[in-house]
Structures are given as structure tokens and as C-alpha cells.
Image (cartoon, helix red, strand yellow):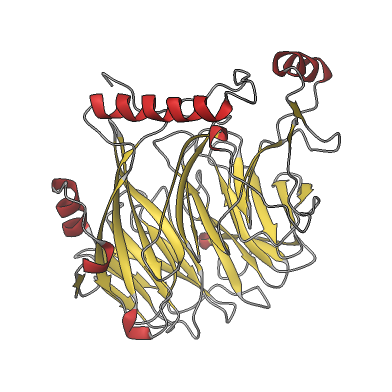
Length: 428
């Protein structure tokens, strides 16, 4: 039977049917969990050969005192570079070939002194209350800001934990991980309610904006001695909860916000506390925005109504696409005109157009092994499923094609085979 392309929200499963993950669609795919779900995660450091990634995440525990911020080190993130046009095997040989290939891969990994299984190490810092969102400073990624459901924002220095993880090679059982009591560098309780919106400036080290569920946005300016001056007078203009914030990658004082009121606002901190631009973006809650770091005039947004849009801020004319469920996270890849979004992770490249000659050439190579639906958008590159209640995805800034996602049932680290990616190899 030819491989069938599954379309989330379009195709339906029969009573005795179930979806199966095709590992050949990934150059690398790993999953793990730490017990309590995490709403938010962020990459911090990077090392290579083989890939080692560091990131932070905050829990959503049953009781406030059970929460913590996790500082993770995942080493030996290995995989196999896949061919976009796989070699064809006969039905009788497929299982045997798969087993042999797995054995060969394991042997190769062992010869290079590693294992096919990533090694997870974790240090926890106690945090009272659930962590709504956490972000690492661009210039100093050991400095992180967390939004608590108790209504305050805290700044943390995790350099001690990151250094300890960098020097350690021993995997610690997750249940045995110690919880460290550490005081935050700074604690701001000036918001009138809890919130989710938070972003560090990519241009000015230490500059931060935070937004809450009472429509207010506060600007943080760093001062000497690892402290911050938070402007007590908020930026106002939205009529409902501020859901996300994004600094411009080219302007020191310009940032964007989105809201449950369906609008997006562009702010210039030099021009006062009202938005410089304010426009209707979606017909429902605007949950997320992502500013393209290469094309600074392009802003992506995702909504509860299942649509996401790309806007040229010079024209404010959207180029929209539709998903089957609400869009809760959206993120541009750091070096490509590609971004991902969820509930299922969908990777799109809106610069692509349908090319009948290329399609015919590809079908000839695959000998019709893959028959894509005629109405499948050519801009849709990849769909990743299998996680429950996905919350966030992030592209790794230094490893092309690597994504980390967090959901109620744990984390995934993935590298789709049809996205530019770099895997560790011997001698690198």
C-alpha cells in the first residue's frame, strides 16, 4: 500500500485505525518527561560533537510549593541523516532491513564512543507557584526571567547550575534530582494580575518587557549591581489580556504585543505609553506573535480561531493560512523563512509556490510511493504529532533544524529530515 499523508483536522481515523510514527521522517527524535508538565521552555547554552543542548523549563505542579524551575542538559543528541527519497524495499524484507539498520546504527554509535540514547541531566530550583512562562536573556542566557501564576516576575542567575551540568557526565535519575533553594536576583510585584507575555530585548542586554492579564505592559531597564528599574507607569492600549510580547530585532525601543482583544500593537517606548500602531489582527484571541529576525518588517501571529497570519508592517496586509485547531505557539526559524506552530507542530515556508515540474520529477523518483493529497498546501513542509496538549516550541539558534517542544506529557527534541539540519559526525 502506498504511504498516505495524514492531514490533521481533515482526515479521520476508523474505529480500528491508529496513527504510527514514521522514524524515517526525522533525522533525530527524542522524548522525555520529568513528572509535572511544563508550560514553557527555552534554550540556553549549546555544545557539539555530539550535540549537547541546555534549556530551562518551569513546572505546573498540583500544589504551589511543589513547583520548580528545571535546568536541563541533554547530551548525545544523535541521529541519522535521512535521504529525502528513501530506497525502496520489498514487503518481505522491510522488518529485517529495519532491524539490521538499527543494529548498524547502534554499532556505529558505540564505535564512536557514544550511545544512541541521549543522556538527560537535571537540576531544580524551588519556585513557589506555577511558572506561566520563562525566557532566557539573549546576550547572557544564564540570566532568566519567569512569570508566576502568583502575579510576580522574577529574574534568576542559573550560571552555577549550568556550570555544574557542563562539568558532569553522570545521568541522575529524575526522581533523585535535588531541589535547590535559591533567591532570585530581582522580584517585581507591580503587576495587577498574573500574566504570560514576556520578552528580552535582542539588542539591549537586560532590557525586558512584561505584560499581564489586566492589559498592562511594564518596561524593565537594567541598572548596576544586577538590579532593574521597572517603570511603574504601564503601557496601555489593549482592552483585554496581553498574551505575548516581541522586541524588534532592528530597533532598540520598538516592540510588539498581541491580546485577547484580537489586536496587535506596535509600541515605541520613546513616544509615550500608547501604541504607535494598533490594528485588528484576528477574529478571536491572538495568542502569539513572532517577529522575523531576518526580515524585520514581517510579523507572524497565531489565534484561537485556528488561523495564523504573516504581515508586512509596511503595508499591514496579511497573508493567512488556516490550521485545524487554535494556534498556541509560533516561532520563526533563526536562519530560514520557516516557522512552526502548534497544537500539532506544523512547519511552513510561505516563500514556496506550487511547481508542477518539480512534483512530477519527485513522483518519478519515488515511483509513486508517496501520494500527497491534491489540496495539500505546498508551503506545509512537516507535521509532527504525538504529544498531548502542546504548549510551546522553540528553534535552536545554533543547530539548524532542531526544535524543542513542551507539552503536558513531556518534551520532544526533533530534527525533521526535510529541514536543513546538522548532525554530529566523526571528526567534527
